[in-house]
Image (cartoon, rainbow, N blue to C red):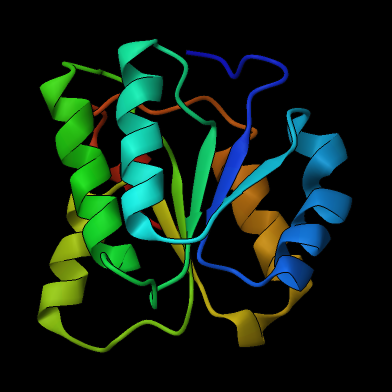
Length: 152
């Protein structure tokens, strides 16, 4: 499924300065603007409504530290919602935080594909590259081969 013009990037749990940077630096590329959410609960309620209306965002950018529900659990819940709505296409996700080193997190990465983990210390170019790879390309169906879905 090709990306539809004017759809949004949803940024969850970031300060206004980063949301503004995302809008200024990614707005031309993704076309629909950046919608900010303060916590995991807000984004999951909105995601459920968006999936019901078949209008999901093009990309979720998640922080780890969120009030109520953390970013990892939001990603897992988002995939569960997609399965519940029998969606073949998955919303690309970017984890914008320093990842924990654990086998459990590795399992989350596999389950939540298409997904990229970008450390803020990697800089602006890494964020732009991840957005180009995920949001500007076609969404990958859940039954794509692991080579098509995995991190590069």
